[in-house]
Image 1 (cartoon, helix red, strand yellow):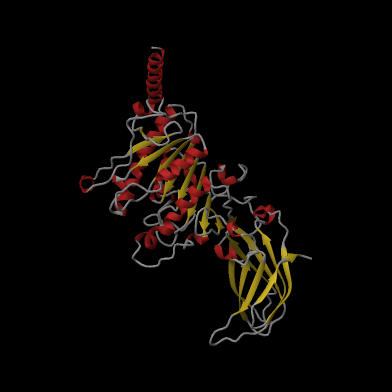
Image 2 (tube, rainbow, N blue to C red; image 1 turned 120 degrees about the vertical axis):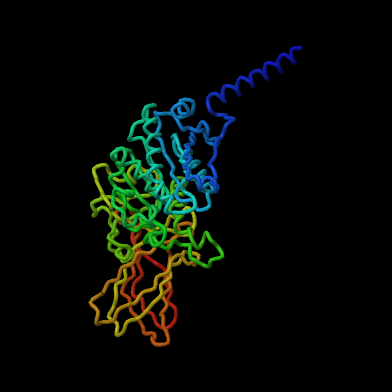
Amino acid sequence: MAARRNRILLLGSLIILVCFTAVNGNVSQNCTDFQTSSWRNIVQMKLDIQFMLLTRRNPDCAQIINDNNDIQNSNFNGSLPTKLILHGYRITGSKPSWVHTLTKELISAMDVNVVMVDWIIGSTVLHFNAAQNSAQIGLKVSTLIANFISHGSTENSFHLIGISLGAHVAGFVGRMFNGTLGQITGLDPAGPKFSKASVDERLDPGDAKFVEAIHSDSDHFGISQPVGHIDFYLNDGKDQPGCKRRSLSSVYWYLICDHMRAVYLYISSIKNHCPLVAFPCQSYEQFTNGQCIDCYKHSLQRCPRIGLLERAGLSTDVQPKEVKVYLMTSSNSPFCVKHFLVEIFLKLLDRDQRVEIKFLSNNQSNLADLQLTIPNKQSSERTMKKVISHDPNFGNIHAITIKLLSSWHRKRYMIHIEKLRIKALPLNDSERPPRCIYNIVVHKKIYFQQFGNCL
């Protein structure tokens, strides 16, 4: 009899627990997901926007929050920061494959309200129509934010993360609040239709207290000009490692790999702790030529970083605007690399000579390559500088090989390098001393030498 009573009490407790958690949002019977577009939606020109909330109390079951009543009955907490995710153009009318990964990492990293803005139906088929819809979508998002503010949020607590066309939607939203929202992150903001638009028609530094953009496809689907306080250009903002346009057989690789790299790199920056450090510079060429290696000498006073750091890790005393910053990346997640300055101190040469320098790990793995022309004695250049990078997962630079290059019209001539020195970047943050190789004389054979301490 006692055993039966205990079973009844246990069952009753479980029922009460389930009811309690259902009321408090840990269990929900009405999970919401993205809509899918259809030809009927397209013909009827409907937008059918919906807003979906995820929090630590319901990380896997999105709650619909389209109006004040929905918000009141949801897990929304006005005392927490709120991040809104705005996707871009959806040619197939399908759900973004990356969106739940991004929300998962955001919720894991911090206690926050995450709102997924579903405007799939208004963003499908023709890019021109989707771009026209973006202002109307921005108005609806602004109404939602105003409702959040009435439930305890502050304007500074909002962070809008816009992908491609969604970045400009975020700009429209920020403009409606006169730039008082906390932050906008534009992930490869769309270029078509917006490259020649005025600042009132696209993302702009005036749209939030801090606006950052990550450029990864500025020569195709992304915008090339700076649109934020800080604009990160990955590998010059163009062709990304691992995204070579091999053939038309793979639509993804051919069309959107570069464009989507900004999204996947941003997700990785939240999940992983290796720093994605960028260097302020006027151009990528100047950066790779070693002219922008000391961030403390720039008005930014430090190197900005990609991730969830407030203001990209910059001081609140610094008020940047449309500052271009550059970084190299690897081809795979977590994408971060170590940057090094290579300095070559030359002897006089009779002729120009092409060389290939390979930077090796202690197990002889190839970490980085550098091809350059050593100038002849008529040149005034006696020191050459280049920035290289390598994936830290494969070890540290231990040695080099130097090979003379030739072609059918160019012979190989001996070169003499007084010193080759490498320094970890950024210079003012590096704790590792520079490493050197002295008195390099290269004939026809490949030259090999390990690095040692600099004298």
